[in-house]
Length: 470
View 1: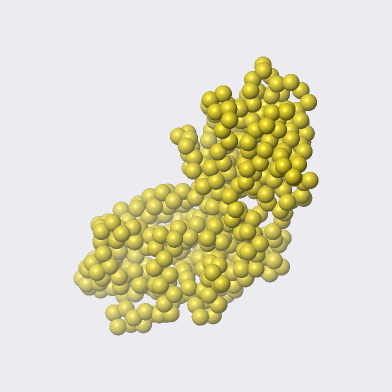
View 2: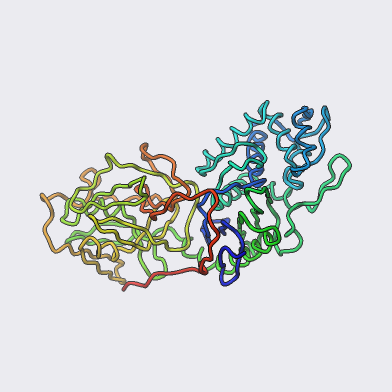
């Protein structure tokens, strides 16, 4: 069964992604924003909550907990991956975490939850709070992944793993152990790529009937760490799919990530003979600007426009002729997913007409070619390389003789906020199933994903760069 193609190689994943660890750049995605059951991969969230509690002194690795009847019953359920835990057995948190990460032990996860929070339900709620804190659109109904109603997307899972490794890199010391001895019994690591794929040192497998075969993997080569996720693979292909994803990530990471390492550079903007500062990214020979910056700069001209995000339709509308205002905006903040290395077609409504622009998402913000927007709105664009100057010709006088820039800060550059921060109190959490851009999102028009998307053959999603402008 083939679901998608990665650089000409078929994978069986129903959802998959590849990200660069250092920058978070998305290198490949297939149904990467569609939430699916993650099976035992959510045990990484349990480990995250535990590490946080150890960090604050709430519990320690040396804490001894005594196995409850409920946890013991789970441990002898042959339908779950487990290590046996007799009622009343004294076990340290350190040993339980080893069993969770290496042997994927469900009951050991529940035992940690009871030791930390009193009940597994309370522990599960802290896991939900943790993913919400990270800005990841996910929800869990148990702590160890057996519920068919648990949901997270491949990209959400990759970002979770990235955050976990950043905050607690010691997780990789546990995840890279080939085996452990627990209560005098040896258990082999469920990660079959350890020792078989150069650089792999983690991180977590998962399987249920609802989830299919899942794996969030990571490997390092020549100071480059790649994180991959496959969800819904077939039994015999989970690790083969992951090999293909890792190979692709290492092959393209240098070229893709290099476009995003630099901070946005200052450029001059001449708008109807008035010079103004602006920030831009140079990507593949094109200069990309933020939509909000242009809405502010064009405010008061005949080309002024306002922005509205339609949450139901998942589309941004530009209202030509209306002055820009931050009031009454339905603002949506992107989740903590980082950068996207592939330009993404995005739907924009101008009046009653629907248009498509290629955009780059860099952190939380949408960057687009000014020439493309000018074609939609009606202004001419020219670029002078020697002076790094963009020239906009509106060909008409300004409306009501209003200045182009906010009167409160007439000489200040537009803040690019490339770190993803945002000072608007009006924002709410984004749906991970959509690709959002900027605080006033440009986004693709996407139907709500079903929990079980149909398999489909997808063309090779290799890197695309738009045509250069002069």
